[in-house]
Amino acid sequence: MRINVVCIGDTVICTNPAELFAEFALEIRRACPARVTLISQLTDGYVGYVPTEIAFTRGGYETWPSGTSKLIPEAGTMIVERTTNLLPPL
Image 1 (spheres, rainbow, N blue to C red):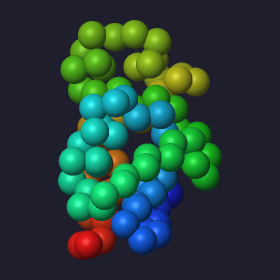
Image 2: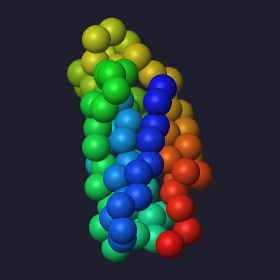
Image 3: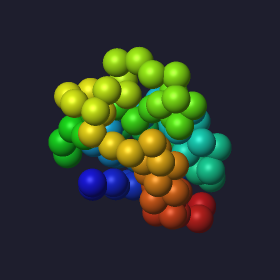
Image 4: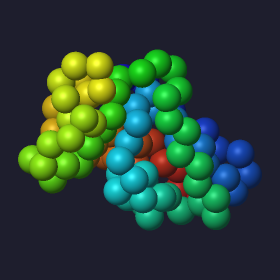
C-alpha cells in the first residue's frame, strides 16, 4: 500500500489508497505539527474501507471481506503509524 506525505509550506498532505474511518484521519491530524493537514484518500488505488477494530466487531457492510474491505482489523492502526512516521518536524 502506497502512503505519501507531501509538505508545501505550512501545509501537509497525507495520501493513501483507502477509505479511512474518521477516527484514523483525526489521529493523523492530531499527530501532524503542520498548521494545515489534508488527508487525501483513494489516492494511487483502492484497498477498501478501513474500519476501526470496534467497527469490525459490530459488523456492517464496511467490514465485509469482499469488495468493501480487503484488510485486517489492525490495518487502520498500521496506516496511522506509517503515515505519522513520515510526518516532518516543522
